[in-house]
Image (tube, rainbow, N blue to C red; front, side, top):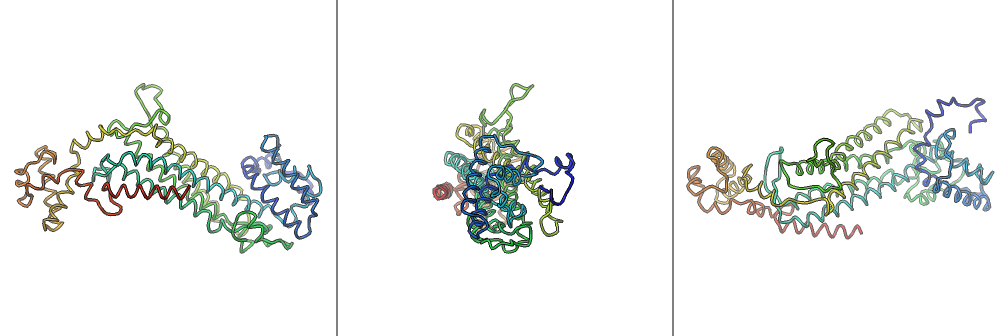
Length: 462
């Protein structure tokens, strides 16, 4: 490849050190697609004849068949996916293959291939998010009437419907779906193809037409930026890191809920494992691995930022290091989305209603307290005074080892004369849940409305 300028060959160690074909061969489909688009444009402006274009198309058909069948020989000495494919094409069709690189550089070639790959990958990730949303949505529909404690600071706070809690996950995932969609906007819509090495093409190729062929809206506005921009990769890996952070939080809840101390849910055999020494164990390995892989994906985002932060204009070989980060970040995110969908499948996500009710019946956390403060407000007591009265009532319960459910009218009067006997009928978790009638609240009617909206949203997604 370098015979005109160099008389010697790179050292074998240098070849192994600098090659990228071992990982960038994943771009072979995009490389062929971009090459075919560019070849058609070279024919339009008279660089290639119709016969040469036909030969290139025929040659690429064979290259594609060889790669798909596993017969293609990837050569380290040819460095990357681009030179491997071009070399094989030239071996198959001769001089027409040599003409294909006219006016083109691997700089705009890899930028186009990688951007196209990222855009396709983002669509895959969106689809997997939507699949997970469907699974969690199904479990939410089944658990509208189940009340669980909600926590702040990992202390019991207020009761909520389990469906409302699961819908919180869907709010997070909705933002992830938007982020993956957004990663295909902005710089991802500007095609580098035709920018050449850094200064633009010497031949009158139509970059707008090339952009359309690569399913991008616009040609790059500046050739120097076009070949060195990796914002599209940052956007995609950021979306992955954010999504993984959400999945990790969800996984953490399930790890806690499935513990013996909680027992809110039981995760199925398909997503748990046992212990090599303790026969009684059911370990939530799927959720733990999701939690662990999150650090890996977030690390890729930091690595990519660090890779890019000191690069001068324009293309530098450092950019070879961008692909493994993006490949692995998207691989891990796709895998985790699929595994979490399996976790939330009807077969693997069992809600232990009796155990949850036992937790609620224990009265631990005094979650009914908010009802007392709200009731006092409705009696004309300023909220801060009501807060103080309710706090004293909780203290009274602690000192007398009583639950709110055990309180009598005499108990209420012993704390404060403003706590009337009619308050007793308000001291239920169901009553407190049903007070939350605002749009985003956990009252049954509101939860059913949100589930109906979810169905509409999923219907629009197809």
